[in-house]
Length: 143
Image (cartoon, rainbow, N blue to C red):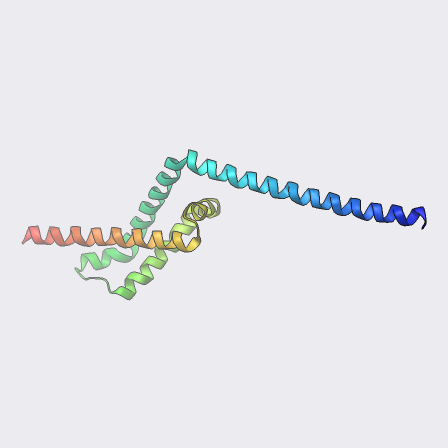
């Protein structure tokens, strides 16, 4: 066999070996990025939760003024399908207000987008129920 044959085999093995090393290096760097993201969320947990709660309150206030206040003024209760529509608007508004980077961090924090949406809707319905209870107690005290 000629030396060119051995050189070409050596060259191909060398290229595959370098490719393999580069892939391992990339996986290691990606793993470090994820670890740093975990540390960032843990170290700044209070900031993330504070931002999350502030955004929840801002979005609830906007939705309440735009969608729910009219029912409150007319002393009407919301039907379940109306609550579902309004809660979807609430989630969309929260996503718009939060921005892409915050949403990625919140999704990472909660584990999945579905869980984040569930938490948002649950929070919205809880605040809505608190408003209904408050409204009902004020009416009862006035009578």
